[in-house]
Each structure stands twice: as structure tokens, then as C-alpha cells.
Amino acid sequence: MTNISDSIGNYVNDQNRELWNNLKSKYRFELFHDSNEYSWKTQRENGVVIIVCPNLEISYASFTHELLHTYIEDKGMTEFETFEASYKYDTILGNFVFSMLFSRCYNFFAHKKMYPYFKQMGFSEYDFVSDRIKYSTFQHFKTKMLFRIKKLRIFGIETFLGNFFELKNNVVKEDMGKCQKGLGKLKKLQPELYSIADRFDNIWKDQKDLDLLVPFNDFKHNLILWLGKNYSR
Image: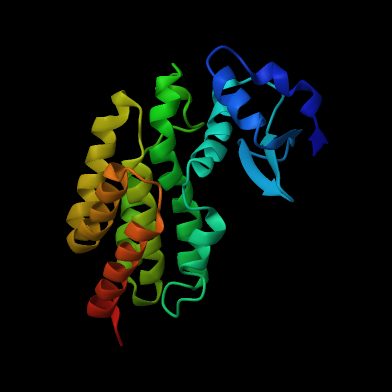
């Protein structure tokens, strides 16, 4: 990685200047370029907020997206380490498959709280994430097959929930129809599991404070009950 922090000011414009001034007064930021990365990301090391970009193209939207990750944590959203600790040592949900799923979903949960600020600053919905969200016929076929094979059902659950939360986080209006169609397929495939995930998503969406653990612990409880009912030995 190459430290390009000296040019970090180039990523600030009239849209994100207030946010940037607010955060830089509280945190130390460093900007790195890493051509091996696929997309932008943010991490913290020794109290420093490190933003990594995959190319040297100036993207105000991408930089702002990463700033918003820090902003919502500053406003009180449960940090990832605390979130991870809530399931890491669980005898049922602490395995590698669920750990990878929840790690991915944490990003979706953060995005749900970040997007209103992104939109308020005047950025385009098309620039919130780098890839458009979709759920192909092949993806659905794969999910169905994983549920049908006993030894692979855990991967079916992981794929189902990962796709569910991704589809629920679509913000591009013209993609809403396709995403709703994908959600409809998931609901038909596993209606009870869909209901559990949808309950969590609605609670988190409407929740005023940013304590993720309260709705997530409820989600975990319902998921464990569902697993016991459907896949206990």
C-alpha cells in the first residue's frame, strides 16, 4: 500500500466538507492506495482511521461513503468488535460460516443507517456502493440446491440471509422491482426464515438509536429457535 494522505484534501468538496471538518477534529485519518483492493474500505489501527482506495481516481462519493462509516460509529452505532463478540463464542452461531455471514452483514446494517446522510448531502443513489445489487436466477437455483443437500444446508442458510440483507439494502430506485422479485423468491423458498430476517430488518430500519445489539440479539434468538425446529438432530 502507498500512503497518499498528503492528497486527502483532494477528496473533499462542498458536499462532504462539513462532515470532513467534523470528523477530522476528532480522529486522525490516513489515506492509502492499494491496487490489489477491489473497492474502497475503512479500518482502524491504533486509533487511526485508515481509508484504502483501489485506484487514484478522485471519487468524492466513495470517500464520503467511508467517512460515513466512522460518522455513524461516532454517533453511537455498535462497533464491529462488540458486534462480533456477541456471536463469536456461541456454540451454534460461532462457527466459520455464520461468522463470515455476520461479518458481511454488519456492513449492510451500517449502510442502512448511512444512506440517509449520503442522500442528504446530495450524492447520487448510483454512487452509494460500487456494484448494483442483483439476485440472478442462477443465484436462486444455487440457494435452493444448498437447502436440499443435508450436508450443505448451513451454506444454504448463509446464502439465503446474505442475499436477503443485500437485497434489502438496495437504494437505486430503478432496481427496486428486480430486488423485490428476488425477495419474493426467497420468501417463497423459506417463509419462516424470511420472516425472522424481515422482522430484524424492519426493527433496525425504524430504530432511532444505533445500538445494534438489541435487535440483533433478538434476531439470533429467533434464528436459533428456527434452526432447532428445522435442523436439530
